[in-house]
Length: 320
Image (cartoon, one colour):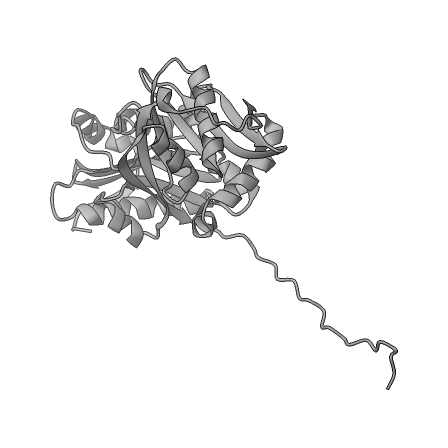
């Protein structure tokens, strides 16, 4: 870092600098689901985030300062459990060539704080070409899952001919089956970073954006083959969708349409899950922005190797 600049958790002594910074509009490179559907990616209000941290309200904040000038801000919050954090603000305000260093330093401080808090995963979603991607990699983050935004009208999705696909509200008892679906659908390299166990998968599920909406599952031949959750920002339904075949994805989209007041929809889909993209394409949706989920995994599951007993030939009794 340049002389005189440093990154630390927000302190009351930073109040004057934060008040000044609060009046400026800066690009937030962290993309979160709860703001994606409403087109607001400004991130946490810096002063509010700092106060929430000081009051221990579940917000964490780091700032990079030079003198009394704020050069960068990062904030994080819990995901589905306290063992996983998501960065929901990442702002480079250096205005110069030091931007990569500022971002890297912010992220390294966030990772150090996560390690002290026994956090196992820190997630950061950015646009594919975001400037923060390279410094994040230098801070130990790894590309976990590419995603693509699809937008369209739910009215264009045709109900599948297979009437045996049954859609119903999800229950807590469905979670093991949903985890098995996740394990079948997502690539191994993504799961190795994001979650190999049901506990990890559960801790990383971000439901903050749902706003008490409905979660659905689709069953086929007694097995859960798809799941959807949705929220409704004004004029738009935002859908989290997973399915292992296009007909199941279409059935879930139709079920959302029946339960939603909005006709326009946004779905964020990993390109590797071709079944969902096929259903969206058939329904008239169009692909838009591309994103990358980056993950800094602090711990890995212990893998136990089972040693097979050596095979011992047993005489058949046939005799010579």
